[in-house]
Length: 171
Image 1: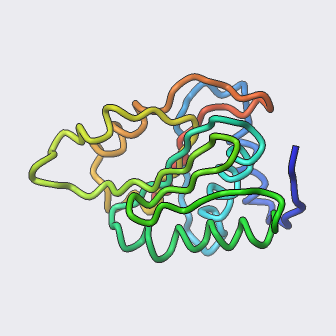
Image 2: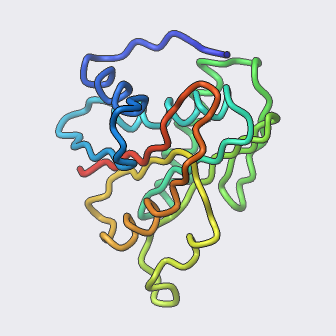
């Protein structure tokens, strides 16, 4: 198991523990980032930890705007890979589809949850299944989009007992 020490605040540790809590059967964890606690960092770190250490995991990081995905969240993820794993892992970035593909078969998809007149039911998500996910800044995302993505979180616990969870930032 590849792991790196990351210093976390007490709030971040609490959120990390909720993500790994097997006694909580609710697949959605809502949290409110009222201050700069770095909870998005924790969500991305959890996704990265799972994808690096377990093969064939499929994760998603979602936001309302493609700009946020491409220019804020993807660079944050890539910086974390460099800072915490260095050259220990092999991955490719598909910038067209905004996804990260790992050599162990795991994938992280970046999903925009923008309301589209041509896809009011979010059917673009129906063919997808994820093991873990993060919705960043859900205050701008419709309830239907959140429900649609949460319905795509599937039971498939990995070898390190990560629970399948969707982390939703309410701020």
